[in-house]
Image (cartoon, rainbow, N blue to C red; front, side, top):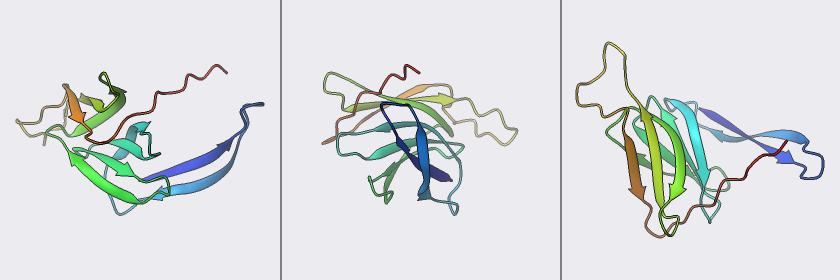
Length: 124
């Protein structure tokens, strides 16, 4: 898994200066939905991996949060204090899928001591 960062010019909308932000090629799964918390940490739902990975603003891996669904997908912050991470999942339809896989459900994770940042709406 590789994640890149870019510089973004608010005035022109130009996206430049591609940089490797996270290099986890030794890991498995594909990055899917991403959100940021108020500390600048990046929370990534990793499809085909049962987990959400959390990275510091410098790209250092902080922790994995493991779920009972293999295909973690879209993420968003919610709750009265924006301290609940909601994660949508996809059903594992592979012939090797485990019967107990809970893909296709919504999950919530109470992020104690963490608050989410609202997503920006892109108008361009």
